[in-house]
Length: 173
Image (cartoon, rainbow, N blue to C red; front, side):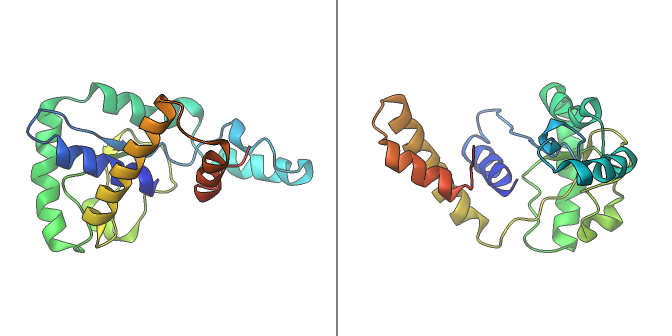
C-alpha cells in the first residue's frame, strides 16, 4: 500500500504539467479468495467475522472503478478541500495525492486512521500519511522501478537477482 501511494505521488509530481493525474485507491477490507489458505477450523470463525465486517468483492472494486471514471471537477474539489486539511493536520499528509477509500470518514477523523474497516459507503476521498522524507523515497522508488522494468523488458535480469527482489518485497508463491 505504501509503495502504491509513493508511486502515485511520484507520477503526480512528474506529470503535473501534462494533464495526468494518478489516483491511489484502497479497496478496503474485502472478503475474497485471498483468505482461502487459512486453516479450516479458523476459516469458519473468520468467515463469520468477515461477513459482518468486510466488504464483498463488488464493494471492494468500487474505488478502482470510481478512480477510472472520476471527473476533473471532482479532483478540483479534492484539491481545494484537502489542501486546507494538510496545513491543519500533520506535515506528512500530502494533498497532491488523491486517495479513494470505500468508507465514509469525516474530515475531523482523518488523523485517526478510520479508513481500514467499516460499513461500505461509496468511493470517498481519504487521507494518506506518507513518511516525512516521501520526496526522496518516491524518487528512489521510481528510479528502481524504471531500472527493473527496463531489465525485464530487455531480458537482462538474472534469476537470482529476480529472486532477491521477490524476497525484498516478501512475494511468496
